[in-house]
Image 1: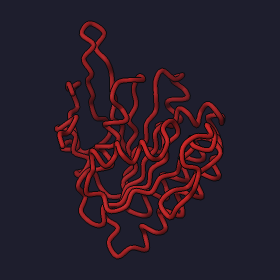
Image 2: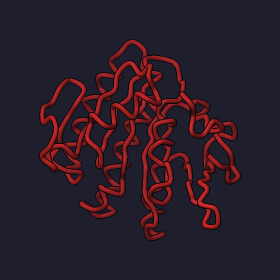
Image 3: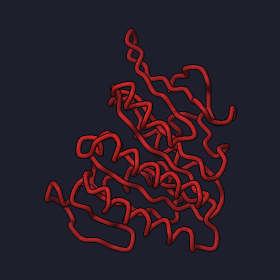
Image 4: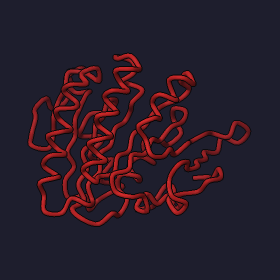
Length: 217
């Protein structure tokens, strides 16, 4: 396994932190998110993940390519029922909701997974992720999404897990400011117009978590 961004080390981030990966579409944010969630934090390496654009089977395959030793990967799938294709059944590690607009269903599924992780003997390695908040904003207004995130990130913090979420830009600056509020730090991604190269930098996290200056990946 080769890390996309070897200078990104969210294993250095304190337990209970929530990280937002933000930038334009098609700039590697999903891959960076997988690396954030796969950081070596010790403990029972378990991840609860919400997918709003790809079905659970695809996300599981991609995530295990990055994190082959994850003990448990539990997925809330917002895609399969809406599109009506693929496996349409649930399991202990899979919850299906009608669409990304079902914030209640997403919250129930994640809470169930997180409760299971919390009841495990060693929970220090657990993480919670979502790709992408942008899809939620297509169904719900900014205030409702903020309230959802406020509750969810609070649960991540109180559980001592690591949270990682993706947001596509551009979005209005006032909306971006609201969305960023529940997060401890941000990984910003951009594409250099002249060369097409992709770069990232870290804001609001400890200095050893990642580069402060724009860095190629």
